[in-house]
Length: 86
Figure: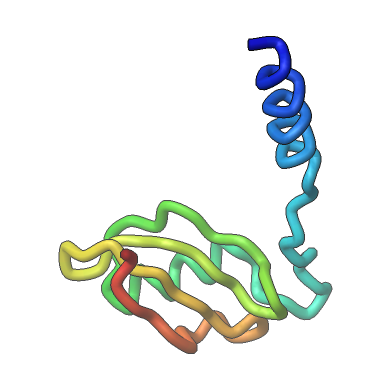
């Protein structure tokens, strides 16, 4: 049991230490609260997550009763892509 526990603990510890690679919003980015407002205007009733990633806003929300993943333009907040969350 001890032979399994040590490598297992080491693996879990290493995975927990991996940093998140989300971007930091730039000074010319639309603030997230304004992006959320645009998403609501586009039909989203609930935004569960929004973060800066790969030079755009990315997140999850509910639209027409379906959980969706979306990408929004960093500067305008316009939805670039959206698809049902799997």
